[in-house]
Image 1: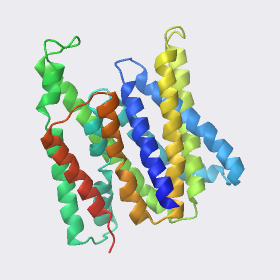
Image 2 (image 1 turned 60 degrees about the vertical axis):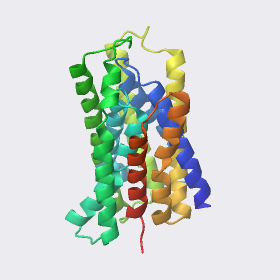
Image 3 (image 1 turned 30 degrees about the vertical axis):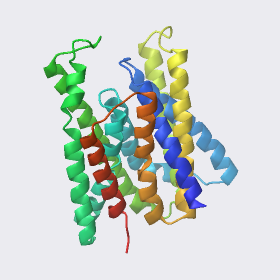
Image 4 (image 1 turned 180 degrees about the horizontal axis):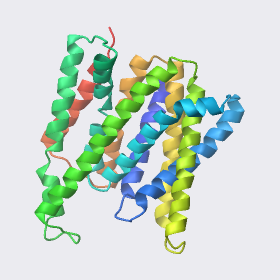
Length: 302
């Protein structure tokens, strides 16, 4: 059963990333809108789920999970910002390499030992990220004279490096959140309590973002039905993936489900190639393969 939920998660998250990239334009409020839509939709569905599953949520549970939820939400802010500056086919695998930093945190803080092949995997992932990030073609494309929104080479490099910084920000924050999550789940909080608590906190943040947008901008022109419809669809798909993710781990072994789900970047790359017309060079595909193989090896438990 876990394989079905894992496949669904891979398809849903790969699709949602592609949708979010398609609407990550230069609109001033696009990032706050995405957080608002995602948080509110996730929260509403989680409340329904809470009543169906009779999950007990208290103020103590919310308080206990608040720091972790805020770390995850901050990581979402980073990825939405990065999407405006970097190809999602490059962005997604970089961000999904957060597992390597979870392992490093476990080694440094918890003094956990890792096998030699896992150290090799860490080296493969880091090398793949570095080489994948060195993408001269991306910046030159932004500075091309035939580009309607062409900018100078200096500005293009700055934009690309800023996007990479946000991508790395997501990777580090997601790693910290996952590390903290592991410790919380080993206490008295159940997976359902964690899921609902995160959704409720995310919903509050989403409502705050929406109130801010309504208070600081004219309502007319703030919402564009065509663009916002895709944001809403992306949020629904993303939220569906959150639930299938939980069930993938509930029905299966995390050692098997985790590397499988981490490969949803492959779906993102395929969809971005088909629908967003993003192209990569052979060298970049080789680096992607290096990262994916490293993720899989890192997750192997013998």
